[in-house]
Length: 273
Image 1 (cartoon, rainbow, N blue to C red):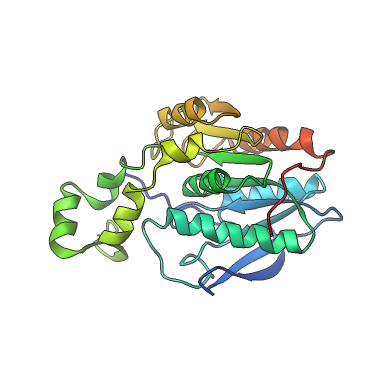
Image 2 (cartoon, rainbow, N blue to C red):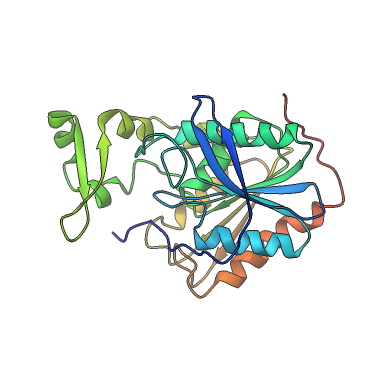
């Protein structure tokens, strides 16, 4: 299975903002400030960072529209503090909560949370717990979290992790990349995507975008999100892979098209401080 770690782009600069999560770990992000206090928050995927090229492209597109954007590293990733974990779905949603509260206290109007891949799961989990952001964009998130594990950890991974308590993942050259603990694997397997999808408030608009030729997360996962989220739109890009290679503009256009019509009205959903 191809690695999910994404190419990074240094093209777009921004103002560094450091936010503490509930564990006291520093989350490092970049704020692309426009004259508007309307803000979108961008979330990266597994083993990626805030400099993921998809997030950089989206941040550039939103700032061109006059909308401020913030992209950040989840704890244990990129420049943020904390230990990298294979699972951590709930913790990443909690990191996102810390970010939302910070910008709400700074009087920003958070109009959308947008995540790619595992970041898509983070924004959806957030929406299932907190009804305070009116628009969510899930780009290539995984619905069936029990699938795709053997592609990273190999066959018989449960027997191996029960025996040793962990699995060390190596690249094709045999070099160590990261450790998967039994607890982090159990975190992933115990994250109930069906339950959380159905728990999202019907007033929250959700867009799922997926590539029909996604080689990491099958497009059928997007269909399952559509079947279980109350207020949902689904867009499948016929020839796109997990990285939307060659379809970057189409991806950006779909995201902007979903968020743009609702810019004139202030969200009725406000964070509970």
